[in-house]
Image 1 (cartoon, one colour):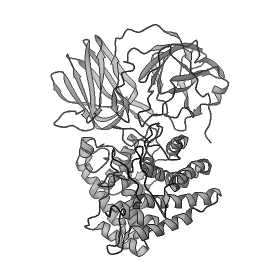
Image 2: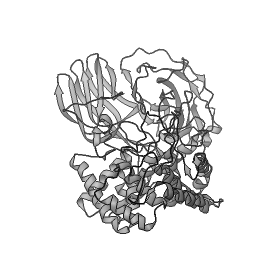
Image 3: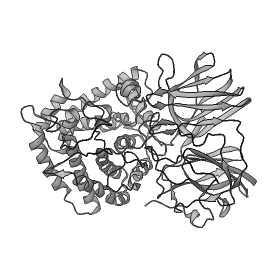
Image 4: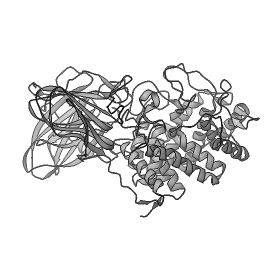
Length: 637
């Protein structure tokens, strides 16, 4: 079970906010002091939506763990102090919108306590002085992307109002301790100035980097535009991609400017600075923010596969911070499908289980009334991908298999049962109907005809992929029931649905499964799932696998679903191991030859999705899993 922060139960701390009108995209400052007898103090904090602590002028802690308001997560960390008087400043950013898929809207607020030994020496209260942080333009609400949130506009020499006493905010006091470790802020990453044209500067960080913008330069008063990207187009940074805008504005003061942005983590390789007047640069770049994974000591003899493995590990590192993220550039969102694949890879190369557990728990904390998972967690938008809820069930069981954490399996069971019950409402004549309505997106993967038609009408149909995924989820539920002693009729339902899949969605003449009666197309994903769920006999599976491996007209599979293709090939014939390894060599060598330092969302790279394809995406780290499965990667510890 999750742990509450016991020190806050006896604390005088309360949730507070500044005395201003509450708005989204808001910034606040809270200050105070305390006297310490020690060289370290315990700092406890929770904030909606993000925080940065400065003690005696130095940044000491940052980054709130995303959560739902009804289950707030807090940090409890040891920070250096000095004996005697210490002055603190806590900056808090309030997201405050329910339009995005990376945030669940709550009331603004911060609750904190400083403890010296056993004595609380300072805490949040009505006496705490606060004000609007005038350095930031509050309430401007210009989007970066529909996932990331808002752009920032920073004025380094802003006139600030006086501090005033705070107001109390009614929010839950039972604060739960973060299950993951805090991310680490690394030194300034090396940058190379690629070009300087007039007052425009382009910097190359030499690899995909995720972290905080850091700038130190001298300037005249002026506006400076900061933009970023994972690649260059015609030797330039393109920061406007469709409706997305990967740029910010910094208004420099006269003389020395120093700026470290604690609230916006960037995923990028290239930075562009566009100034109105000349500036004298000491440093412009990124301080990486990395989770302190304990990496296993892995040996791989083949040089190409060693390079693929190491690049996969780097991809995973860039795609985990407070929770698993799909891609650090465009979204930074926790998806049930993406994170399941990342977890499977991570169990092999890292010795940590808390990243998986905390990510799975975020989905468990959601309270949708229909029993399905939100599109991402935490999020409030009433829009979801139903099939992703089915990937969550095996993800929970896989966590248990690797960690042995039966307590979490028991804790998760009501949520898992609710998901299954929600899908049974779609059960009609032996098969599930897909979901309709504007708040559903019947996405399966990024291949033609399987992407669900985002923005298009979602129609009910009894399709192959949803039913196969449901059977697989039912079989995992049966295993879970066996482990925790629950009654099980899930395997019976799985067998029944498999019979209907075979009788309704199998082309006897071609020896392949087709999508639906309305769409008789054949796909690698659909047939892979038919093998895995048991709708195909062993003989049929062997034949399907041979078709999948050869020249065929099946809808191809994307990097997001390679897990299912490879597992299906192994299910059909373990001797397909070499074909799988050669396929990984072919696909991933192409990305490496293209200059990849992390692996792409799809094989097309940045040109996918109208030039919005990510060059760093967590699901593409799946070769790690197969290298360990096949004994290519060997743990020397």
